[in-house]
Length: 111
Figure 1 (cartoon, rainbow, N blue to C red):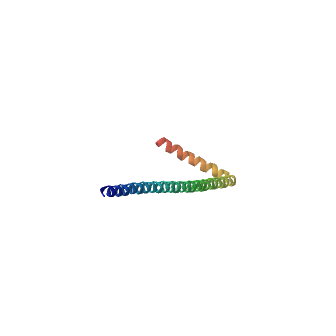
Figure 2: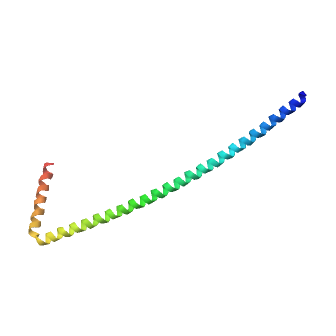
Figure 3: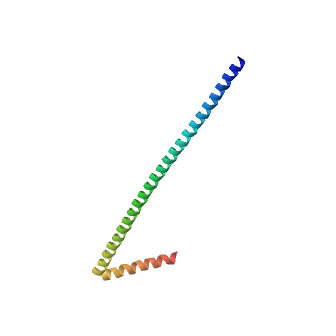
């Protein structure tokens, strides 16, 4: 009877070992799947972030080009207005330029 109990006990231990191995394999597989899911999720998030950064960079670049073009247009317009004013009032323009030069000369002597 002792042998029968011992054999039953050994059989139960072997069953427990098998169950534990199966459980360990299941946990390992679950960890592998979840790791892969996390990797895919992180990759997707990184790709999305890269696309957002690229789109934002392009948008900022376009805005910079527009601002530069607007600034050039403003400078051209101002230059045209100054040239027209000089052509209308050449003597007054020469006197203003001489006055500005005189003031700058005085300021440079003091400094």
